Picture 1 (tube, rainbow, N blue to C red):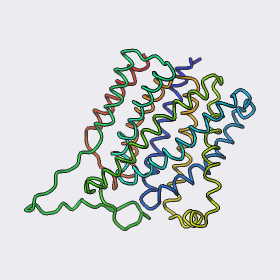
Picture 2 (picture 1 turned 90 degrees about the vertical axis):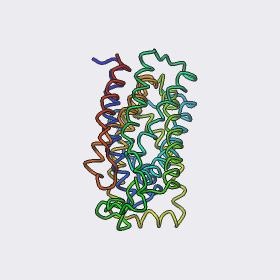
Picture 3 (picture 1 turned 60 degrees about the vertical axis):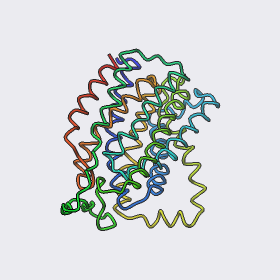
Length: 326
């Protein structure tokens, strides 16, 4: 009923909503947890989720349809995306918050499209480039601006610190707009690394699954298994085990929510890349950053920055998505 491109767009939509819930859940978990805790929990618990999905879809029995060389490519994508990229993502979220980090992190679309044209010989029309440009610009409009510092005669604003969500520690969390410049730059450093990692991994996934006949679930299982295989030996360290076992209960709850939603998001992301070109899938995934704002308002409104420019960002993203697929 749907072409490969049509299925890819449907998969991306489901993935986008799941990614949005994952982002705000991870941000909430980072208020009282750490990036390493989030990575360990999401990867080690995510692998069984994909194993079950591979059995349900029966793709586990089609393992011979992927050549050994492409297994290694998918494994490399898993380590790059789920370990290095996700760690950088959690660090950026923990410092900047979801609303400010998301436009930076989502710039991975530019790297993905350029590399797809260069290495995979994918074709991008002028109309598609226009759509990609809009998708690249739109979420950036929603990034909150830093407030001007108050003059010496101006009394301090009461909202420079906000109360965190229940269970978060310490008892107060600095608002994003009150962070010192050095801390903001640290957040942007992790965000750029995240964008580079997540901008490269789709090419590896697309290459690994291009001739598989749509085995996206199996590809995701391979990638997650490789990431888990790197983490499992490190559990021999008593320091790491202690860090995981003493995780704050509130952080654990939100990281578990993040694990489930990011697993679903990655599942449909792999499925989309198995049937549609990188140059279409990645920019549409980038447009999904707009979903983060309403989710942040519903769940993390006390620890995020909001500005009315979101309506313009939504309109531009919708226009870009239309240009990309017509």
